Amino acid sequence: MSDFTRRSFIKTASLASAAVAAAGMGLYSGNSRAADFKLKFANNLPISHPMNIRAREMAKAIKEETNGALSVQVFPSSQLGSDTDTLAQVRSGAVDLFSLSPVILGTLVPSVQISAVGFAFKDYQQVWSAMDGALGEHVRGEIAKTGTLFAYERMWDNGFRVTTTSTRPVASPDDLRGMKLRVPPSPIIMSIFRALDAAPTSINFAEVYSALQTRIVEGQENPLTLVSSAKLYEVQKYCSLTNHVWDGFWMLGNSASIGRLPPELQAVLRKHIEAAVLAQRDDLAKLEGTTRDTLKGKGLELVDSPAEPFRAKLRSANYYADWHEKFGDEAWAILEQFSGKLA
Ligand code: X2X
Image 1 (cartoon, protein in one colour):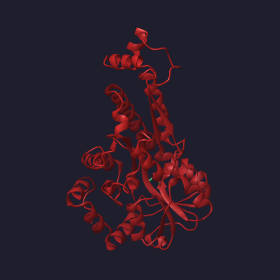
Image 2: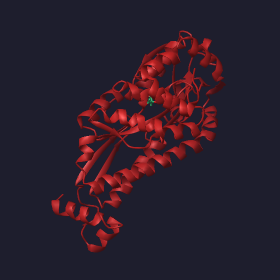
Image 3: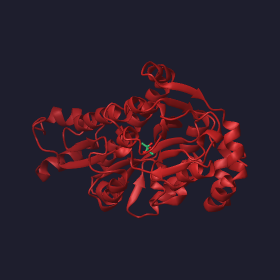
Image 4: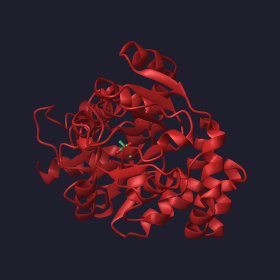
């Protein structure tokens, strides 16, 4: 698109409503024009997951508000590559936006995994106070130190991770002994299942369904909404409500790609990301109530897994002491401000 139009957008964007003003002034030729700026947003979630529903709405709202000057193309289901690949792509700028769980981002920036300490948060009240507050701020600072990546202020929700299996339910830590379990490529998730004496193996999410189907692994662990939207119930029998780790997704941006946008477009993008994320959190909260029934209806057997025996085993395996040492006293103190004393 011509520079003229882009400059027109930038100028009119400083008015209260860029789109209305621009349309009124007849500056734009409508939807048929090519975008001045195109961004690729990659993620690993199924197209029907609330994140992708909100992401599509977000892209539409951005296009409308900028009258087509900024286009965000959403690539769900690891279409551009596995999480490991996509992390490399967002670092190089081949991908502009990538929603990534801190547990996987931990392969690049270990300190961001602090939000995924096992059984740290007991509910969403604690989660969002921490992640929208001082703990999130600490983590975003660590991400910014990469120099190539930054994280938008608020995280998408993934949920509390539960454990699904085909062979036996997981009601207590003993049930995990030797169990072949898929975990994400993640040091901290690997470590919790090692401490619980399971046999975890790292597999990118894109391969999880087939790994379960072919019985390369007996089970996996992910939040209920994802167990449902990825149809994992088709290849699993038990769903044990371990709720061992809360998980979300940082909305990562490639600093150079986003920095190339005029400030007005950056502001429009930020505003719509924030709106989409907050709506998605609500969607997941509402789904909480119904997803258990949905999964039961699909034939999964739901199993209660009280947390205390798992916590006790983690304490005796030095899990908390080890991670405390890795994250350091300062960061650990921030976490415990929200979670309470952990060990
Ligand atoms: O890979 C997973 O298990 C997932 C989808 O939860 C993450 O992105 C961490």
